[in-house]
Amino acid sequence: MKCPKCGGEIPFYDLRPNCKHCGVNIYYYSQDYLLARDAKRTELEAASARMIIARLKLSFIGGPLQIVRLILTLIGVAALLLPIGTLHISVPFYDGNFSAGILGIIQGKDTLLPHIGDLLASPLFAQPSKSVVICCALLAVLALLDVLILLFYILSITDPAKRTKTMRNLSLAGLIVAAAAQIAVLIVGGKTPDTALTHFSAGFAAALAAAGYLALFIINSVLLKKGLTPVYRQFDPKRKELLAKVRKGEVDLDDLPLPVFESEEEHDERLRALNEALKAEGEEAVS
Image (cartoon, rainbow, N blue to C red; front, side, top):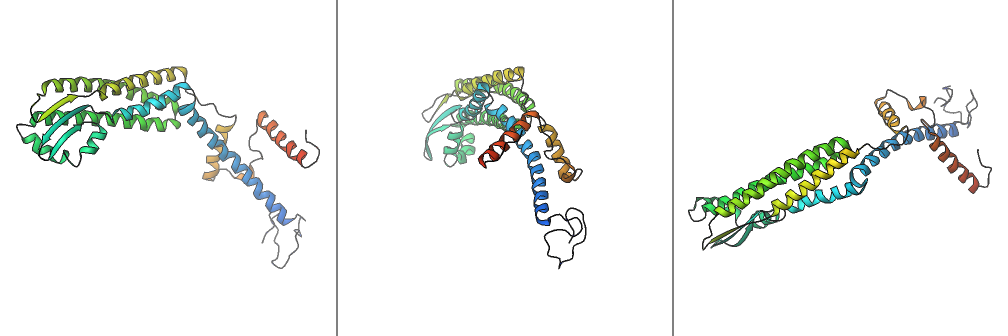
């Protein structure tokens, strides 16, 4: 084996705790060496974690507007649980209401949906069935927009300002689509005649979704105007950049000082923790 300090060869039968070349205690030197490497790596990795947490707080709970945005994003999804339109049908294989909403589709997937082709081909049910298909298509478009908004909301921890801008644009698109969907449903409802077997009524889930999209568009616009720049601890971006180089092998941890970076605030905090530990041990404080 080799001495961890001077690199001198030590025979396997030499059981002395100290190196015969430089005199260093091999065990304690190795422990100090490994602890120093761990401390350096921990400092760099903790900086990356703190930066993620800073972006997460800024995006999700950084203020009242962010909290309201979270609620509105969830309301946008919940609005589609309500029906955009509802069709009451009374036929041998189905007697009840089919709602063009997420819950209605789930409830009707085993009863009405398997027969939608037969209903479209029937002269008695063609028009009301077309109305249901139109409502379901509008629901699918709104659901897609909600998924995209929710996705970019989650991804906002990567780049809060850029993702918020995308959410604002998607909210505007959702507002337009939801308003158009509500108008279309009202028109479809007016043109769908009631019969002894069917009754179609327009719902207002699209209008509720439009109100949510409008509020979400306003909040995202205000957040962009105020600015969404994460506040990082001093030197954390440099620590993260250095960590990437260490992982790529471009920089060796042994060549870095300990601590790698240290601001005045961090220096004072480290000394305070050290003095508290020394005080607990009954030793003299360090200035």
